[in-house]
Length: 194
Image (cartoon, rainbow, N blue to C red; front, side, top):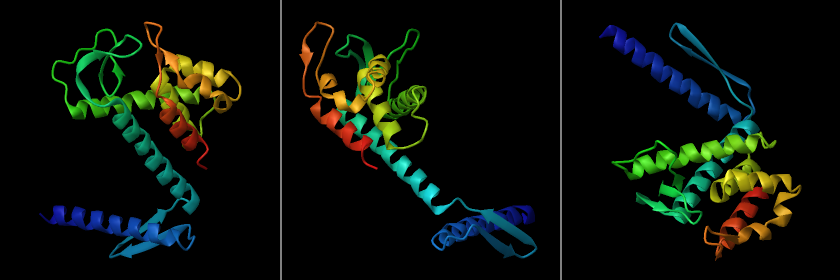
């Protein structure tokens, strides 16, 4: 019991140190020292700007996920996407060997994040290595139209100057799919946000 109390006390002291370090960032201090009984805890903080950028990136990442969820809609049963591929969840293309007998909204959410993270990794190959709004906009474009189309888009030179060419595209039957203007406009706004 004594050991449990000691661990809990250390944990609470650590939380307090983190709280103080976050509070200190508003004063641009680089380190905070907390003295608690016989223990001295030194917490090194990130520069305020880098922490703020990371928080903004996480917020924009979540906005991308929510936009995809809203745009794609949840389907717990397999369907064919406009490209004629077997799909499930929030636009997850079913790979050979994948089976989904019991599919839930939670599983769809996890697959969405996994697929979007793969798009981010793909975008990094083209030089979008900085975790920012530009990387997310390009990853969203790749998620929506496929990474092959994304590669062509990036290789075109100045990708967002040519977006109108990517607003309407054909499905497997050769029919034009319209109505993607809102999505491309959202990506452009995200790309140029900061």
